[in-house]
Image (cartoon, rainbow over all chains, first blue to last red):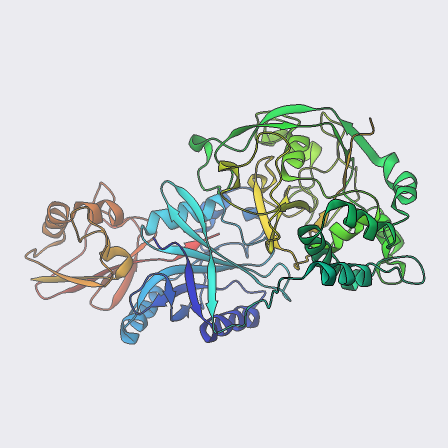
Amino acid sequence: MPDHITFAGEVYERLLNEVIKRHPVKTFGYLLSAGNPSEVTDFILFDENIRNSDTWQPEFHSYGYYFAAHHDAGFVATPEEAWRVQKEIWARGLCEVGVLHSHQRHPANFSEIDWDMHRKRFCDLWHLIISMRNPDLPQVRAFAVSDDGVRLLPVRVTGQPGDGTTTATRDAAIRQARLLTRPDRAGRPSLANAGAIMSALWRLRTVTEPETVRDVLADSVFAGSAERFATHIAPLLQPIAAASFEMGTDQAGLRHFYGESPRHRCGLSAFRMLRIPVTSGLFALIDPDNRTPPREDLARPAVNVTWAEAALFALWMGCRLPTEAQWEYCCGAGAPTPWCCGTEDELARYAWYCVNSRDQVQAVATREPNALGLFDMHGNVWEWCQDDYDQHFYGRSPWLNPVNLTNESQKSVRGGAMNALPEMCRTRFRFHEAAGFWATDLGFRLAAPSAC
Amino acid sequence: MITLTLPTPLASFISGSDGRGSPRPRSLLFDARSWAEFLGEIRERFPLLADRVLTTSGTLASGFVLVINDVALPANGTASYDLRDGDQLAFIAALAGG
């Protein structure tokens, strides 16, 4: 199995355009190569799907409510087309190196059904999933798949320009941070500049000392954060006592989940966690002109928020996004079970997810809180965390207050959403999105240091 | 003589000491003149492949397609096929996922 996947830029663009053109119809097919299993030189797609045939529908329904309720979830090629496609691959003189399919609602994760059906048929092919959950920003993820489990494979696209990152000098970093964090006339930061602001603050922290960072922030749009915190955030915070817990999943229970191992002991200092996801009404404070929702959405979680916008809002409110460790402890309340409630049968009491949400984001705190008094940790909306995502982080994370801050483009998200499968709502399920990604099921909550 | 052609994903089950690693489709010749003889020969020569595409009772495993002389046949519990000398066979996967 390769350690990364490389697409020629032209092939990658052609594939995405084809998936976009077919959306909301599911796309599935093979990735092809002239021989090197890591280099994609072409692809071939199927047109017919017999997932709802008498032969196949019962098998899909056996994977739970989501597949029974969504007849467009899943795919099976017809025998005739499987043979036609096979002959076409041979005619092109290419070979299959990967399987691909698109997700219409879910993020680009690899689920149990994918693992089962892939392993039953293939031993050497990798698997590419393209999520169309935000059709403006298709997500592409590749996975190495085997009986031993699933591993994320980096996807590289040749012929695309680099990110243009340069190393800022100290003075330039301070100038840029001051410029970008200057308040507008209403004393608010610009959400449109959230990515640039958070990048500037990252560079500032990288090239200057903490005192300088404090000086810059003191003169910036963040100056009034203490008052905003006291007014809007403090009443919603739940104190969380210092604790240690088992984080992650042991190898025996890992199956197709990646990034959750090794299971390890993790210590957390006392902190406070928002009892609910940040609501649309709360989030509108930072940009009332553009973010004020209809009245009926005020109590629903804020969604369509990028990581930078979430982090900027958190800073403006005198908080931070929770670390993955804080989030995981708060979700499961330290329990060893997959969900805070122990069994899937009880999950609907605590979570809005695919079995009870009708695929709609729901008002916060309308299910039961968990043992720590926190609402909506499972389901409703995915939640951004502070950490940069690294599937290998658990193997080297520090024991106390771990957080992975490397300014990578992929940020950790947790919790599942209103349309998520139960396995995606698990306490220990790790997922990730590009920092600039947004979606209708992606929100966040806030964390703050302990009050004492 | 029967010819069996395997696409790249299934060719992986017949090459090398552990039955894996072929990067290319493969064509194989069988002396069998019936489905029963074919089953016996494939199980003896290519047990990893047989375990993957056939059930213990000799039917095609779910998720695979048997092609006989350009006609694609799904796994439907059929226990025997009418094979003749010179037939061209292929096993292919019926792509599926969630």
